[in-house]
Amino acid sequence: AQSVTQLGSHVSVSEGALVLLRCNYSSSVPPYLFWYVQYPNQGLQLLLKYTSAATLVKGINGFEAEFKKSETSFHLTKPSAHMRDAAEYFCAVSVPNRDDKIIFGKGTRLHILP
Amino acid sequence: NAGVTQTPKFQVLKTGQSMTLQCAQDMNHNSMYWYRQDPGMGLRLIYYSASEGTTDKGEVPNGYNVSRLNKREFSLRLESAAPSQTSVYFCASSEGRGSYNEKLFFGSGTQLSVL
Image (tube, rainbow over all chains, first blue to last red; front, side, top):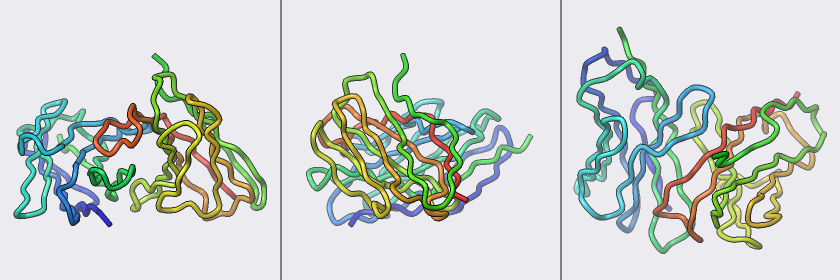
């Protein structure tokens, strides 16, 4: 079965610094991959998704992620962190034509230091 | 636009009580989902419905039942609540039948405490 592992339950970066949130996936076939963000007391919102088109995917709020098959990774990055980026981020995976389920990672809480 | 609406937002139950969490979407989506979110565990899929009239188990279905009442509504029932079911519950929907490549739209959640 497919799964994702997010490295680091908490990540702290200074405002203006690079944001890097790590996600590795496990799947026997090429997966679809997603990043979602959850702001306090809200539901999740889609940041970006990879569905076998371009390996570098650009999302909302300046985030992007690169699919690297050789490393089974889909890390999320943003060149310059802003205070409003403080939230919890979830990587998720699904397998095309296999079932209807999207499986989420355990999440990484991003803290922005002034 | 209302999107996905969940009720109630907060609920406290005693062990053994039953309750139903309601979810409705106004986007004419085919697929609907129930997730639970626990600290350090991320979101885990309880049940999903790929189309009206169908439901399937997710990762953690034990202790729950669901009903896809119509295309708009997908309810989650706890027949005999247990403290282990204390969690935040999210309903979500997506457009297609089988949403593996689609955007999920989430409700704002129900915080449930079972004493």
